[in-house]
Image 1 (tube, rainbow, N blue to C red):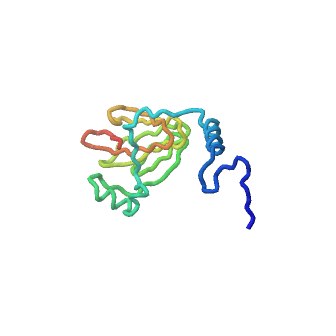
Image 2: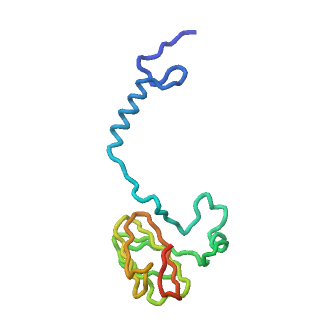
Image 3: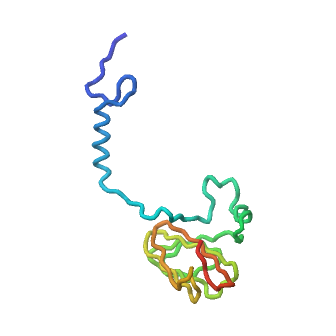
Length: 161
């Protein structure tokens, strides 16, 4: 049996332990790639989604909504818009290019739809005479953010979930 000597400055010892050369190389690589940091300003903001997460996928969406205290709704119709659009009940709107989404002027009690920012542009929300969480207009700026809106006929306003 021939004994093979290790090359000079290997990354691991024969026992699999990282060498000083490997550690130095990783630190140099880290310094080259980590040139900036991102600060999380508000950790209290939590976004919700109108579909179950992978861990909740054992139940169907309909069963999840019927088992909670929230009003149930029909399947959402997915639509991508890149020009101004008036939302319809049960729409899942993927909005892009800074469009304006106008809310229905005469919604039915319990109407629901979802607006998602598809590209990070400033999506404008127009209440069409109705209040949106206390305001007449709104903006959805963060890419990937999706917000459910529910219409409450008693207060004649749209509330975001």
